[in-house]
Image (cartoon, rainbow, N blue to C red; front, side, top):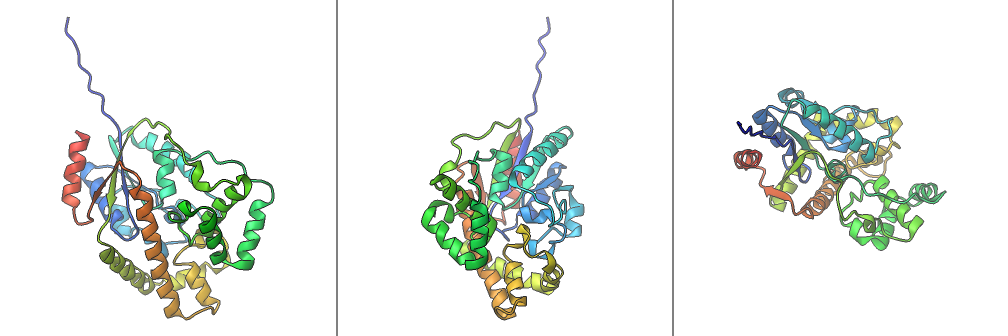
Length: 308
């Protein structure tokens, strides 16, 4: 009797994480081209088709280099959460894995990356009226007031969250006001099992080099017409995707709160702060393999060996 041996191919999600402007898009494209596969964007702001320049969305040439999913998939008028992304991304992966042994996911939105890789925390339902009160406080007292509230009530999450995103801060404060416990205390001890393997690649570099890249990117965005893009979005400025770095500062400039030069400086400063928090978030995962953005060849070899 002949004994047959069957080889089961393990489907693998190659996840590229790291701070903004470090080079995740370029690396994801090289990996996708090498392994003839597709890319899922986990940059939550690149979902919105009206936001192009300020989100450093891939160029047409980059989009043509490999199939991309979740780029320009929504309007700023749409309500979309990390939970929605978890469901949609898993369904997309299920389809892609039918013809691909590996798929690439790239992005710096830690919450959205975690949603796909591990599943989301089960948070308690907020008490009635809490969110409305916090939204009113945001309008009356501004973002710095909410930032200080979060720093006092949940210093752990304060060090990780994008503190220039009021929706994230309001959500964390909503949990605290409803339960008396910090948002960070509701983290899961175990992740939801996935029917595929996850290989996490982290990109990072020396702080001064990263900050120089961020500053140059902001200057390039302004040259490409970011201010004009922001002007077209004025009617929608209260929508959550636009309450973020690069847009909020220019809305304030258009309101006359400070000069254009000051607004640009604030975008650079806030982006650098956001990058620092991204690094803090991703560095907490011991399963991430870290490389310099210049080590593309080494990363490809590492992935090839892992896939074997």
